[in-house]
Length: 393
Image (tube, rainbow, N blue to C red; front, side, top):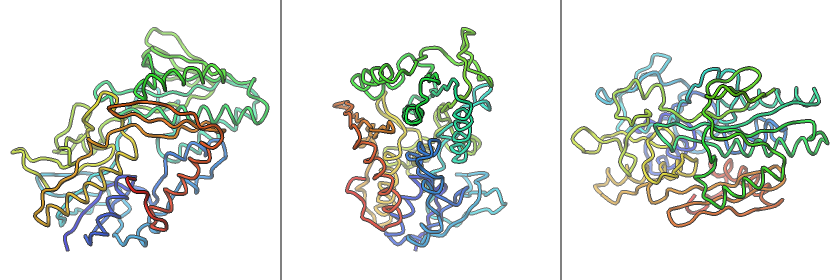
């Protein structure tokens, strides 16, 4: 039985482990935390609609469901030349046939970033956001600013959707409490048209939604630094804020940048369309990179999303099996590149879709919120093998 070592237990890593176990591989999963975190539903933790435990799936429960081996530790180093992985605890692993890197990305660090919290950062930050919002509710008034940034070296390393969702949910929460008029809500971003990658229709609808909800917009100015009481921009202007939620752009993982793996300018691992890291001579190595850790090639509007990571995971398991059986029917991720999400607003949602042929946003009043809630339950139970996976997902 061939051995596969998987680094990272996010959407990509967990799926790769489950698929490869079904193919009877000996799989070891390494994670720096003991739970799988459902980031898309974490937007409801700050508004008390979800508890932290509702967004976590115990990795030991996933281990029992799929039969992989589990190591809870940080990855300290990766060496392609030595075919080895060193863990923070000191263990060196080098007895694997294939290595799948699914460690996610690091975050760009703007000056004063410690004065912000991110809904896409460490899971514990969702609780800190909740506490900060609770303090402002108790205060009775305040200025709340939320936004996201981009990476000039890799346009795919941006995640703005959760920022939109969280602000809409906060608006809805304050409105339900009857105190919305006491708060100034502002969405900010350094780019002139944040959300443009979703398509022109979506961009127009977002602008309309901001106006309808009384949410101010502050776009098109580069961020110089974050301070405790606001955001300072490159032209020295300042946006005052009692609480700032900011989602930094993704950056190459620190461990990857220190490794001998080939990366793009932003530090993401270069692969072919089949998610395989190539040797210097162009041949396939025994290393695959999937999810946010990998350089995503393709359209200008491409974005790193969970469903793309899941496609990479499924295809990688298939491609490894093909190699071991002498086949060459490899599957790539590029044909599956699209933007797909249900953008929640707290009392409804909008279905957003874009591929190379079309781009649209479809409002889903009321039912959209419950559709996303239902997806959260589906995600948990399908990964535990309690319900079948929806074909294509």
